Image (cartoon, rainbow, N blue to C red):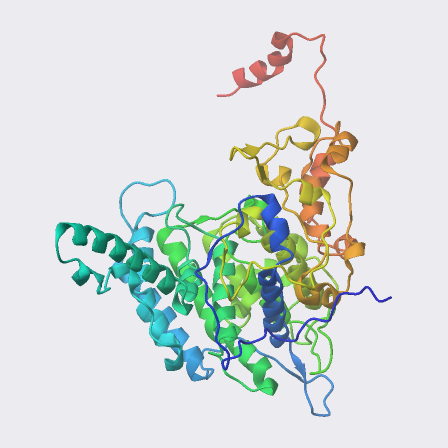
Length: 540
């Protein structure tokens, strides 16, 4: 009996416009680790994965139909590229959002974290959300509702005697609340939730991969609604136009906002994260440089475009400057160089390690997809704020593979009936960063058959013992930086690729293996301090 998961659809299914659809105002569903487990088997998780793979494949170069074997059709970022009307409308919306920055200049007062003027800018965006959505939606989807302004006609019904008036007030309130609930469950309420959640947090003054995921969901909603209307044979071209014509300007806007308001990274792992703010440009940028494929060929998992720069060139600033305007991956690295100083291996060790992969950009693209699934879609701090409605549904996917218990899944935050989070002690009893203690549950399968695309099966993933057994097994071992490095890199990229990494890729691990001299317990502190005191006394 064949137990393999069903084949994934090539593109995200669109809604049937001939049938009525019941919209639902998106709301928060993920409150603890058990909810993350449900999300990994939900229809929304599958739809996000299918849409991500759809966009990723569209950016891969294509083999040329000419006799020249080395010729390939590539899809670089080009400022003079023409786009269809739906894409141009969204470009105008993003351009207006950039103009709103001039209406909310940064505050000049003293501050430690993000600039409070960001709240003003985001407030302007939220106040104009309805009209901005109306500009980018086709006319058949209707104008957005304005139920929050109290424009109903129920106030005129409160008349008559005092007794009748009291009754009419109660009836009117009931009718008004019912009307608000009906208007909240509209198409524009769903779109507005994902749209306004794509630009950062007004409370925390930060931006991260969760907000980027919200914008991806916003584009997925537009795709489902048929805004990017195209024939089946043109879906790949339309997907490519979404990445180059909408996602790229969005990333440019976000970088402008981050630099203007000095936004904090949301849920960052510090230097042990891929990037402080974004993830998608590394996926689609590596796809742009992968080995060319034919329309019927599977996505390449190794090799590179003939004219692509070497994977190790991301550490060379001249090469980055040459490619940053043409490639999304190098554009993201270029922004890191703009905002960070010091050696690249020091402030971006994960990207530096990845640059040592010798199997080509196809291998990096495969690893980026796995990493996005594990570090974004499967992490409670990232997906806890993701809202669920009717377009990205909380309902369980009937084809979802049953999740198996792993160490990562055991370490999710859990809330008791009193609402308090149960603390999970660190492995080995040592102090460690919270994100190293509570690694989010990594799913054993990836949505929409993504595991088949990446060339591995759920049973190939390491299924460790429970958390209690792991603590007993590693009770006397210290969490080292090398463990952190392996848990975030070697899970996604093969170990043999990193054996050929550039010199210095594992500097931290090499330094860690050096023996540290231990002080003689028979010496007093005065005797141990004497050499230092003599050295200081010799200073001029």
